[in-house]
Length: 157
Image (tube, rainbow, N blue to C red; front, side):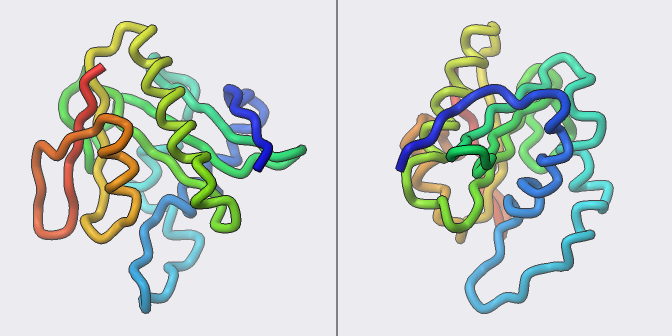
């Protein structure tokens, strides 16, 4: 599959709402939540005023003229929060573009970008049942904590 990866432009910020919704892990046999779930404060932390804070970075994958995936990081008090120096990851790919290596490439490029900018580590939270756990391990994340539902993972840069 031919795709390119580039930085998100300021005039495209609203696309993060789509990818925030797509990032919600829905176990098999469970109904998808309504789209307005992303308005919940615990989810808005990922996108509200994105691009205004130091450390807000986003890369997107594009196929032809369509953005099909996004990975973004920011220092925020989210599920994967470690400390105020560690950016937390969010990533999602539109369903029809998953399992083509796009997510892995987005993750690798963002990790490199963070390293170049001087960050020492990055974190994320992921539900234990999510198939993406394997991909996160493959790009260098390690489980450092867990609760009954999810892992907290860190990648040293």
